[in-house]
Image: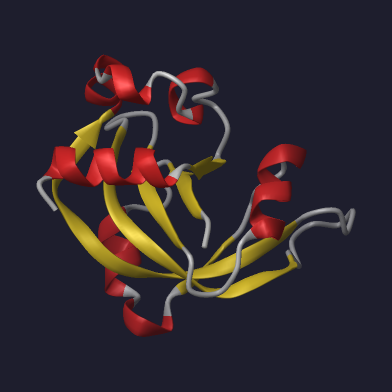
Length: 137
């Protein structure tokens, strides 16, 4: 199973809102970058993703689970983009900041370090383990 990172501006959609949605989860929409959309298309039910607060916090704050694979985004008039549904799986004990991630040499090749603007990113198993260890999980 693949692992992912989903970025959200907490002023628009924050971890607390995602967690409050409970088991029914929410849709992850609004992606308009072709590469990010390609990553959404590759997601499978049951896979997990880090929930990353962009802009202000710049930190991984939780883990979500993909509960519905890729389907068309009804807000996209072009028909080119889609979305997935996610539910909160667990909050991190503490945010793992972008600064901490950049300071960890074993994460130097991580997409978040090298292409921080991409809103949907793959995460390797090793990167996943390192970040969870940084959080103490």
